[in-house]
Length: 638
Image (cartoon, rainbow, N blue to C red; front, side, top):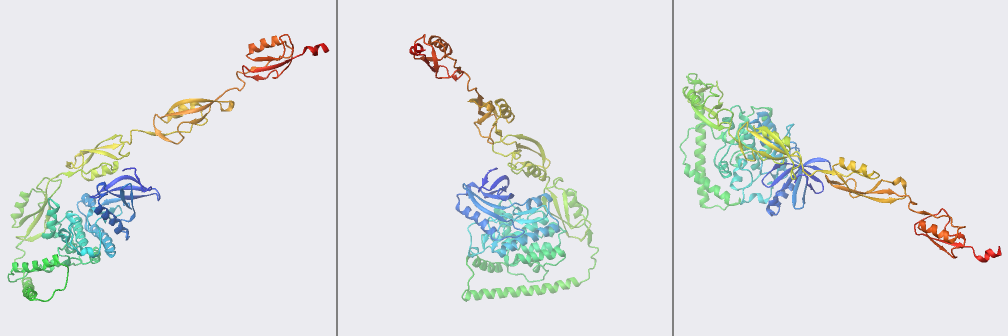
């Protein structure tokens, strides 16, 4: 595809990305002389009506509005069954690449990027567009920190369709909202959930849910609670941690209800990190003294209502005895819960008002265990009466099992029996080498270095398919599992082995001059055919060539020419002698020697008196000269 011109306007320069249904190229708009990004629907989907509709919806959705933090759509078209969208070219990296390079982002960068993403979604939501696939891969970050949200490929305009169930779950598993995973109602709040997951990944360096398959990850979104970011990174401001937890509530009604509300809180935290945000989870996490609740009965009650909500549209129901009984159940349960809350608050105040007798005696200092093997660190912690808890293992340059992070911080004073949470090194691990083919040589080298590998031998080969300066292949190949420091060799295209050259204008050159000029250009002289001329000034000059000047041809092509050759117009002609006064006999003998034909009207002894062609005239060989002789009567008269 490299070099292809779409719509007589967009020349494809290099492949810069690929998704499930489309490939993205950097291209040049030949009309406006600017770089653009061209997304081309994969060939296998071009005849699929469903995907074609989805592809067109992306263009329609994104082109319907414009914002500083949204990638602009310029054009959409089809050329020889190639369906494409032309977009603003953003010179930067995906947010996913930024996170991978830096491990995790600091608070200021997380807030700055989060605010810009929220602004993009605010604009989309105001235009009745739900993105439905917010993830770091679809967020571009320029060198100056500007964020651009792209890929509205599965965006869906808010309409009656959004309140119907769907047979297909669309989105990316790690960033699913629970309602997406269930294939249920989708509204603006699904984008809020996904943005919460993105914020979580930015600030902690990892997604909250992972698994062996998309299905297992989706189930975790539905079933498992999101672990507080502060349990992963103890230095995260409580306000930001609470904001993320509120955005990622499983029940949409407990989340931020609009992205504008979330945006406003992000701005407040940016101005004051100690700003208080109470998420709905905290409201139910105060210590309480309460009677046991019949979990089964409560769960059954919830399940009945949830089934009704899942299976039927919202509608007004007529009063009946079953509903009244259900209401009574809820009233009883509500009363029990309210009493429990009141008692819990009272008990909490009572306990907090008691003097902290012996508190200092029960406190111990968390030992320095970073860099120690797990077994040694665990022993040091447990010897002080603390609990040793492993939060996770992650790839790291340290040997497997080495403690790399400790929460709370080492040196902090905590009560005995408190948990000391640690993250262990899983060892250097292996990274998968991406497909570097068709990338620019420098871009490919950056990829290799950013992944922790080393650039090895770079060789060049001719290629009829890959443009000059682009990667033909890597060694090892795509999807190879490599460790940090492993070497990756590259083969770069030198371009086509068949070289082309431009034919020069050979007019007015001599044959020798033309031969030298052609040789310098990698061409050779073909047949040189002379054409006679009586113009001496044109002698030896070329006036015609078999391949027009300016034409690009393969090297070693032969160019034939025509040139002028001067010839004297009188060359080979016979000068007519003076036959007057000669006898016919003598004149005939002379004419015969010269190759002329003499015709006379008298006998051989007669004397020639006149000739039809004057002496000195140039005539062709074989020309007839007619002469007139003196009559005998005329002589007698004399």
